[in-house]
Length: 474
Image 1 (cartoon, helix red, strand yellow):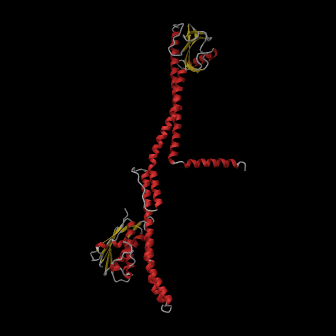
Image 2 (cartoon, rainbow, N blue to C red; image 1 turned 90 degrees about the horizontal axis):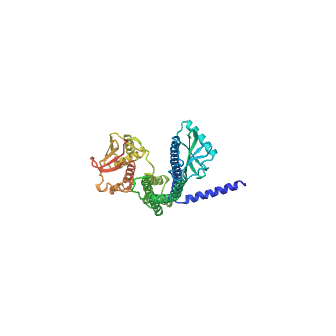
Image 3 (tube, rainbow, N blue to C red; image 1 turned 30 degrees about the vertical axis):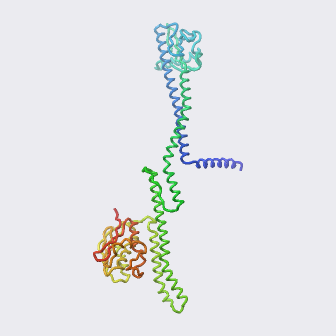
């Protein structure tokens, strides 16, 4: 129990920290994260720059010290050693030391009794320089030292040679003061430059992110407006054709589909309330009369009276449900033979009891849902048989079914109106002749859901021509 407490406390603290971080806006989090990474990169770059500058300046100083040692060694080898060695660089200390570490010659700024290197350090570096020369190395051996009495930090070049047959060592010391000054100035400038650049970059990132996320905020506000109003609406589409534009278009398509689905639902409720009122009232009247006069109606007579209304109400509800489902789900397509679909529709229409001659010609296929295509064709054939004088002709081809009848036809100004729900023209207002008024509406909406259409025109037989167009498989 004692161990669980601290872990729980730490977990709670960490959880609060995560929640506070997530409570910040996306713009703030991205700006802070990017600025932090840039600051770290700039700091690493500053350290690397300091190291490069330091290395390059020290290497230049080493080269200069080695060159001066070689020049003095040349004077020693030619027995032209002056009493006072020339010093051409600021702070340069040059000496020629014998095997015991005593000063043979010195530059003006150095003492003739105080060598640059102690005897022990001189012997060690001379031995190292001789070993380097034996291994094929050229030039002076340059090392850093803090043992020089002339400068606590200096670069010292050591080059063994001989003077009048005696071993001597040329020692040249160049101070690191200038290099230290350059590095100190560079560090001071970087200490000010890195935070300044970080702040400037953070401000630039904040502005850029604000402009980049502005379309997202516009989408959010528009979506909130649609949610508040609860009605149709659309989201603004950014001018740039990028991921945000694609997202806005996709969301608008989703809103359109939701609005269509809501409109279908409202239409279904309104249509059901409107059209079911009459059959329900008729059923209620028949039941009330039978209840008030039980001896006037036998069971068989009451069933015969109620059955047509019940069947009509069932057919009406099925049609309304079909219309409500149109567009609610993707179409399951397959290559369907239209000849077989038309044959089934004609066989069903012939059982209606009307003395109408129906002929079928042609074959074809379509890329549709088989059940939906069968419903459309059946509606068109039944409508033609219902209104034909005595003859119906069905012509099939790829992606097309044409139904002609020899009835009275439909006036041009009414050919679009009949596709509206529950529309019955004067000729067909009697329910025995006209049906529910949903057949053509179902046919067109299902056809358009598949990417086709239903159009009405004049038939060569003298009546109405209904043309069904459906997509074919590519």
